[in-house]
Length: 430
Image (cartoon, one colour):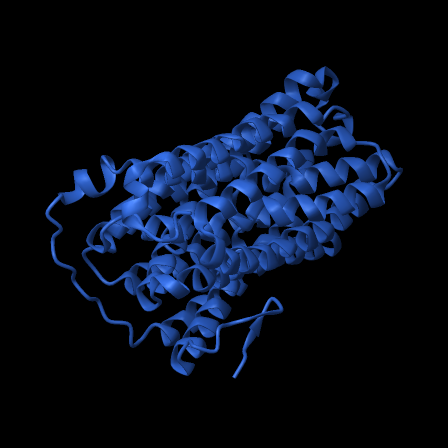
């Protein structure tokens, strides 16, 4: 029996029970992700209403990543000691509550930063603990594709987050948009309670090398973490400002702010969604040609997009949209490969700690990237001090900053492949 998600068939060798579990878990996580990029979709509207700078608008997005880091590092580490399903479920419900509070009580920059930080705490307890639940269920030979499907749910949910937020905001206001996505996350949280009810915790024996040897002194694992941080720097800078970039292009073409923001949010949702197909495909190919080769190829292409995309501002709208789709396809594709690769480079007993360390460095990069992007916009667009994306006409330098960071990924993979330790630790490190 073939089951399809993102037009890519799940291997027939997977047991029917595992197929059913994976698809239902992915469905739950798609709903949970409805809150993930809701602020990015309404950023221009919030910025206009509150009269804040590009740097300040980006800092609200970054506060979410900071909250994510604080919870993800601790909670993912705890999955080595307690059942990850409890962390996942509680975090999902926390996301519902905090996003609803943001919609109701965020009135200016300070309250927005606090509430978005609290919302990030909820999301931090879902992605990596959920990834560990998937990794526990599938062996190494099937893990790349399984994690790829899970990451596809992340991407599709994120794209729906932008789409729903943009559509609701276009006919109502940004507060209702945020609240609506929170209700979608509530649906996913309820589904996850049923899907994960039979998941048991399996304690693992203590490896001889301990935490220090298995993670902190594990050079191949650290190189995989570096590549993930470079990936997160590029992806979150791009996603955090893509809707605003498209909005500015539509404003330049004569659209009103409301219409420009609504169309841009819809397009951003579609552009982000294409990445869901990319992660499934990348996971599939990494099981066959190797993790490092897949990551190197994808990140090189993505970095080239970052170096060029911003300079297309003011060009033909169809061209910008087309390049946006290819950009989004490659900017996210390597994510499941990096996570699957890390699970093969450390002892299972310390997998939660390793994923927590990956989360720490990845989301540190992700938290800084959107703010730094906005800072580059401010210093390269002096007229933007009037606090309106309509005044921003130079986007190239900000996107190039993302591309420069992304280049660190392929460089890390070159070092990993040259490391003799990697040849002993995993067959996928080709």
